[in-house]
Image (cartoon, rainbow, N blue to C red; front, side, top):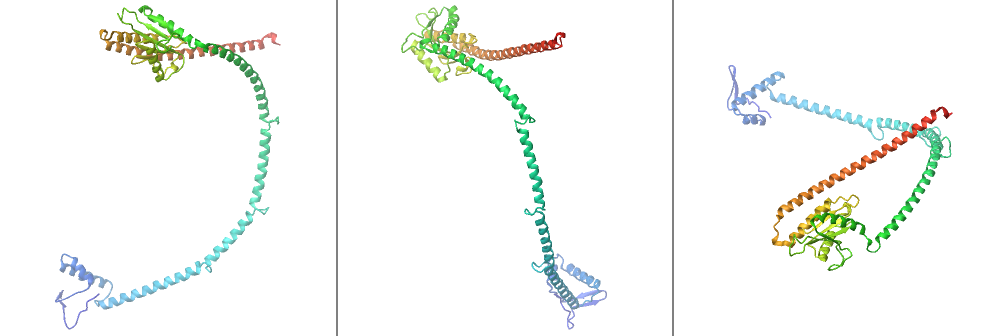
Length: 416
């Protein structure tokens, strides 16, 4: 938007080398906005005039703003027409080239596609004997038949050239030989099992069940308490208050419990029991034999419900006496504990023994016993391993000796 200079009212004129503006008004939005945003309105006007003058002089234009505006409008119209004409030509060319039905590029691509399709159909036609697929199928079929025949011959045990034929002969010979040896071993084992079952049946009959281990425990307990002059009674067949539960009863020397009777019961087991059942059976044995303490002795550690070789629960204790090794140390500790428990129960307030100290000593002994048992088990395993190694060494030595004898026989002058 421009402002015209009226001839009747002169608001701008030159005075020497200066332009003088009087009552000059400008309503162009860009000029007004620039001046409004400037901190110094007069400076902004000076800049606008200077910048406009420089632009007009560089463009070779006059100060006639109407002429400049007219030329810009013409240039804009010409540019718009040129762009429209170019776009129209581009659209016509693209339509001519890319039309889906009549486009030259579309026709060329369709022709190329038809040619490629025809060539591929001819090359990979399954019904054509000249196609690549037919040739490939023939090659694969021939290779497959050759491989199948080769594998059949290789895996045929009747074919003497096959490795399976040799293996089959060796396996049959080995199986026959081993079968005879196994049959012989099975017969020997069957006879041994029948004999052992007969012996076991005899041992299980009547009151003989567990009697062998009871006798072992009786001997060991008798030896343990002998120097204390306590008495041991085998009560397995003797009826007590409510039955025959309680295999051994140890009565403590009356000199230690004047005027009172103190005793503990021992139950012998050569079978596994749970902790609950073991303690319940001890309760019944103590009640049946009027005992103040009770011990249940297991024949093997795997039968005992606790891992420790000796463990007490109030007035009852579980202990292991391995009948295959017969180390009485745990049983001796258990008898010492039961004797002290029964004596303390009989004496009551008259007991002058330091209970705390005794319990401490017993607990220390129990822990040492557990450790000693573990060490002993490791030592036994080591001895077994050493013995097995020695046996293997002896067998190897015997085998070497036999081979040397064979070699000597072969190289002997009499061998020929």
